Length: 194
Image (tube, rainbow, N blue to C red):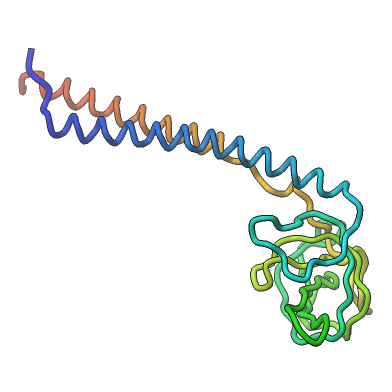
């Protein structure tokens, strides 16, 4: 019986161990994500709060009902979004000034089929807090705030996937495939050439 080649065996063994480790890590991440989603689901049942002046990145009040006041609109953004009927269109986001100092707030004022900025200059807003690429969080209004808009689909923790189990299965499968391929290569190397 031939001895296993040391360097290739170590490389394949290390690669397989790394892939198994990544699979185990994904399983742990799945548990963490499930706990986070449960926290978000619980937040949607809490009483409404005032829109936070300075949200802490490690403790964002996502999916919590909130209210705020947009003193004036300082700019407009649009992004792909959905209405209550799950139709695709444009979500209209107003960057607002809340007062003389401090950060402002982002408000999703509604949904439309066109990207043109709506005619809204500010006011009271009630809705649900979600993430925002530019402002960390934004308040998605529960009702359309300008003529020609429809209500945006409210953010929901149900729309956040927890794919970590499938990622773990992929890593375990990669490790198994690498081990099988290496075993087949070793077997072929041990057979005499035709």
